[in-house]
Length: 184
Image 1: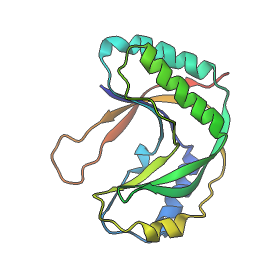
Image 2: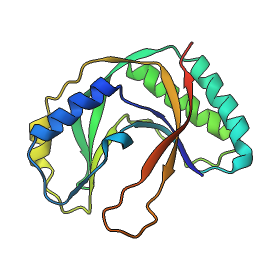
Image 3: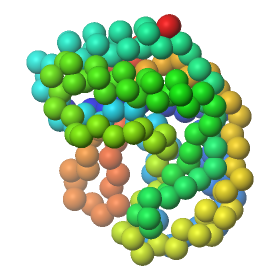
Image 4: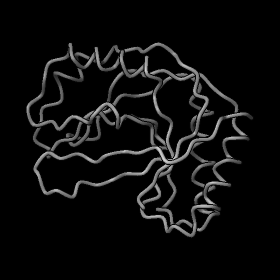
C-alpha cells in the first residue's frame, strides 16, 4: 500500500484556510486539493509491503513517543514553480523537522525503501497545475495569511489511494490508517 507519515491540520486551522481560499480570486488551470486531503507530509514511503507494517508501526510509535507536542500554524502561501500552490507553516518548525527526520528514519529502519534524503520543507499542498496557471493573483491575495496556532499532538500514517476510475479530475483519497500521540 502507498503510505506516508503526516501531521494533519487541526479542524479550526483547516476552516480558517478554507475561508481564506474562498475569499481569494480563482486561478484558471488549478486543480484544488480536497480539504480532507490537507496534510503536512513528513516522510513519503510510496509502496510499503504488508510484512513491513508491524515494524513500521512500532518504529513510528517510538518516534512519536520521543517527540513532545508543539505549536504550529498555517502561514502564508508559496509555490513550486507554476506546478503547485501551497500553504506554509510557522511555529515550532524545528520540532516539526525533527519529527520528519524521525519518521524518515523509522521507515528506513523498518526496511521501507526511501528516496534520497533531503532537507524537509513544511508545506500543505493546496492546488496543482499543468504548469500553465497564473498563480500570482492567489499568491498576492493570500501572502499575508496567518492562521491561529494549534497544538500538534499526533503523528499519523496515511494511505494514499490513487484514482482508478479514469474519470478526468478524480483526486487521490487519503485514509488515516494509524495514529500515535506525541508524548516526548
